[in-house]
Every structure is written in structure tokens, then in C-alpha cells.
Image (tube, rainbow, N blue to C red; front, side):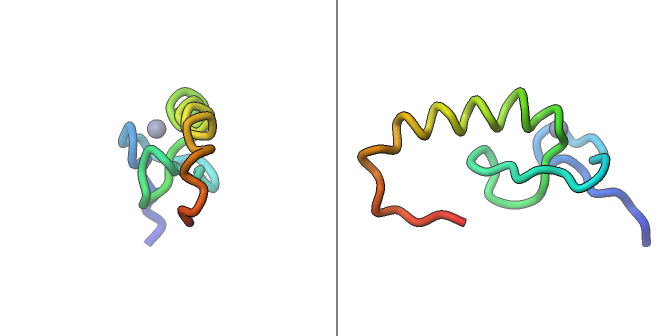
Length: 59
Ligand SMILES: [Zn+2]
């Protein structure tokens, strides 16, 4: 029952709580490494792009 959750991006086991992989993935959790190397840069990129898309709800 104590199977560790796997990162939905790289597939490695997640230590601790994991991170929200949005907007790279809409389900699951990602590891800290992917959070910093994949998710955060993507989030920054989208936040620049998203200014004109603001009616959209996420989460
Ligand atoms: Zn990962």
C-alpha cells in the first residue's frame, strides 16, 4: 500500500509531496527535478503568452 507516486514527466519515484505539473501535464504529480527544469520554465513562458487568454479558467 505504500507504493510511491511516480513522476508523470520522467517516471521516477517522487520524494515527498511531489509538485503540480501543470501546464506540462494536467494530471498526476511531478518530481522536484522536473518541476524546476520543465514545469517552471513552461509556466513562465505561458504566463507571458497568456495575457490575451485571460477568460480561461484552469485548475
Ligand atoms: Zn520527474
